[in-house]
Length: 251
Image (cartoon, rainbow, N blue to C red):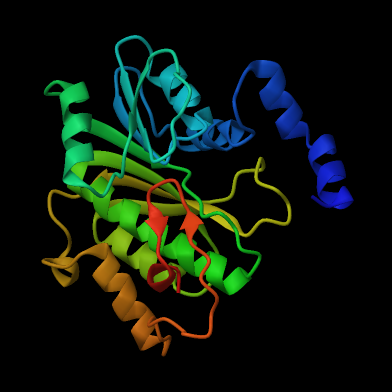
């Protein structure tokens, strides 16, 4: 751990604020700022938090939906209990996990899916951005599959190659899609959040019958980007909170 990293984190006002207010991560303030700006959650809503560990976003969601709401968090990693939330250890892309979510919902429809999911950074920007793009696109497909029409989806992604393909895929499934960078994000970070509101009853015609992942893959191909693995890259499996990516998936 570098001395510079330690000093920057020690001075981080959002980290200090989160600690003083009992939030588990500074990222809680990113969701609070998103909520203040877009009102993505309402009292009584049912919310799914994908990649919820360590639980900061889940804590905020519980506050926003109130006693009549319901919050379910999913992550591969075990998350310490959050009062007012149901937590699942599992992969949100697997049917068994979604079945557990539905059991907790007890017939309620999901109003909101939120995800602050992020890869374990390798330090190689292109690789990290590519993994993040895949994660965000995967979560978009999951969200579209579980949200009720009119529902809202919020996810993190990183500025860079392929993001326009993700934005277009989101616009084919939601009537309103905006990008937003909370002030609680680090100044040097390239992260941005997609705020996707009013899920359409069915995707727009150009996306009909296609997944968001297929659309983004086609977008990358149109840019001349090869998505097959490079055999010279060293094998660096990455825990991402949604699932463990293999070497082939990382690249």
